[in-house]
Length: 464
Ligand code: PMP
Image (cartoon, rainbow, N blue to C red; front, top):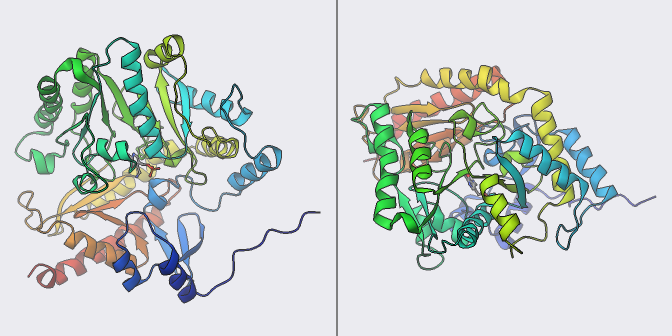
């Protein structure tokens, strides 16, 4: 019989904090500030609840990082991983080989995603999926005899990852300033955030205006140079920007008109988050390429995918020869086995419908109840993806300067009250596990409500 696995040592919270400060560089973190404040050590989780090393129970209003769609503590997923690890933990998909869970997941995703998306290319992260899409669309245009089509257009405040090209494709200015000079052939248009970019227009008129920015960019760059447009159906990390009515239909028309490929980044919107399996279905987008991660395995395993439609797949397969791209863990059988079971859970438990018909509308209804608060400028969202934008002046988009100080303060108050709600700038963002109950939504929104009241009282100190 096998020896039991060596456990992770049982250390006290101060010991973990000291070791963390000494040895661990965290993603997207100011380490000087982290060392001063010390980090929270999360030790276990169940459903929508986390426990820290002090035994405090915390409501996870963010599903980890928008990913734990089926909630924590799913025995089925642990069993799926254990079964596959015992059978075949790993093998490569290079060199004319494949593994059954990988093939089965590709088939399942081709069934589940919008019509025409027929093939899956697997990666480990959303960044790598988008990085793959970048190389793939440029390779596609080269094969099609139009190698000048290299430019990819994204949007301000779009987020597609933090590898070199995915960061350049993202519209996050702070990221563009770090890690080297500008990467050529990425352009950005303004985001469809009506509250900030077109508050005087009707939603429909603003939808046309915002989509028109794509047409203007294409004309300025030259249609023969544009390979693709990429967008998240709802911009998550960039501030929970919900597109106005008509926006996506017009974007779709403009892309089709110029033969430009449309890439939907579904990394946050996918797997039920917006009340349909994919945000593309919520907004009736028919993408040529779709990138998936996060909810694909509910975060239980690092796995992501690029779904490729017939148009690109045919060219790649028939004219492409070898596409010199891929990762050691592309199509990792254990990660694929877990993703398959995760999809089965979403399906079996009707979680997507639950978001669309029950808990999604309930969260929005409860948040709408905060719209009269003096700090709340706008409540927006779809499904279990919601944002509450805080403003200095309710009459218009009277944003706070510096941006983010008030939002961060409110977020810290929520954390102190043991609910995780993120601040993006001054927008409070929520994306809880899809299994959240109405009572848990009440706890989340009540915590936010009290944090807003306290933030209002603290305003003179925050913004002297
Ligand atoms: N695209 C979107 C829309 C995302 O929100 C993220 C991550 N937050 C990514 C891509 C990058 O995914 P990863 O962190 O897995 O590389």
